[in-house]
Image (cartoon, rainbow, N blue to C red; front, side):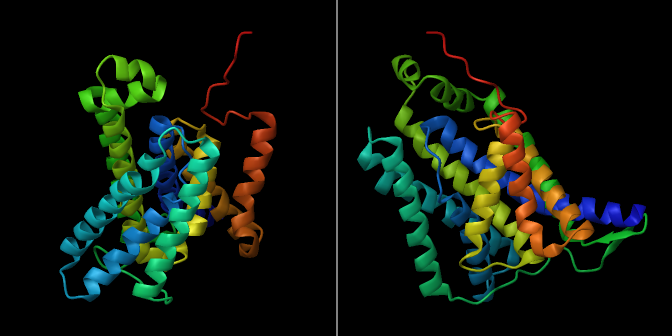
Length: 291
């Protein structure tokens, strides 16, 4: 019984780490712009699909992964410059609709150029399972957890210790005040889209060897990432990462102990129940307005 629970826990943490990275991408853009970017799941899909395409073209795996990350980051920058910046001052609804439109366009282009099939990347360090207290897991799970932890640590250092990171945080607190003290808000917005695309691409690449990837993979990953973002507290980057891990573990235990057919439903049911009790999420702060 213990080994089964450990197996569910490892599987849940592995998949949940990617949900957390997707939720982290949502949070980075929301903090800087106030926009919920519904194309975030497509960044995750794009990272995995481009890596598969580049590797199949004969490029060595490390270079293919790097190329996919760079290309997806450029797509994030283009999205901001071509679709978000031209409607500067638009309402939140307009901007959200634009992100949905971009999501559909990216998915369509990938479907037409790379195909509708499901693809897999090679595992980074072989496919020999690792045994642990009766449970077994693939070495790719270690890669996923290690890279996710590394990204979280790097982002924490970036936001806490670097001037650029502090400038982004200043925009999240008060864009007008940040502008008045000399922060280039437009540059921060552009960088937030690039950073969000980078994080999404890494999530898609490290997950692709385990769960495969396809042109429509981003839809569900985007929904799970958004759920992680809400569960952890909208606007809290590390809350989003924790929310992703919680959702992954809930899914894994739900699929193992009840039914795998309802795997995708467990996370959303728990999310709804939580929001009835604590609408600000597990790690979010309730907002109070004095009138």
